[in-house]
Image 1 (cartoon, rainbow, N blue to C red):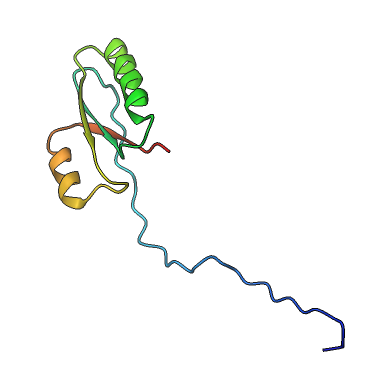
Image 2 (tube, rainbow, N blue to C red):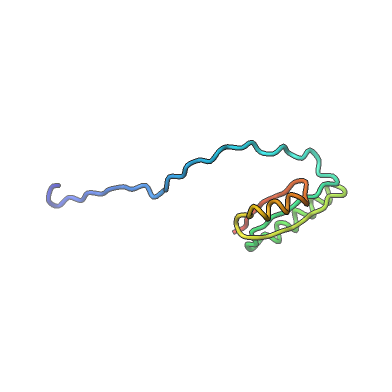
Amino acid sequence: MAKNTVELKVLNPRGEIKAGTAQAPSPRVKDLTGKRVGLYSNSKPGMDNFYTVLEELLTKKYPGVSIIKTRGAFEIRDDEAKDLASKIDTFVYAVGD
């Protein structure tokens, strides 16, 4: 390296993550009338407001829809997901920040 020169080495800060096995999404529920809809929140500020409005919109549009709200950490644990799945027909997972 010559005198009075600067050499920069550029590094990629992203780690390498191996992709998991792809899975097809579950089929969409055609109509929410009379269905049980789970709303999962990570409890961040603003989520209560968002889900309050979403619940109002869903109950106005779909007669007999019932809403089950639950909250937890950023990721829902397997045991929580299984328990919630046994009580609902479909669900919304949203995070606030």
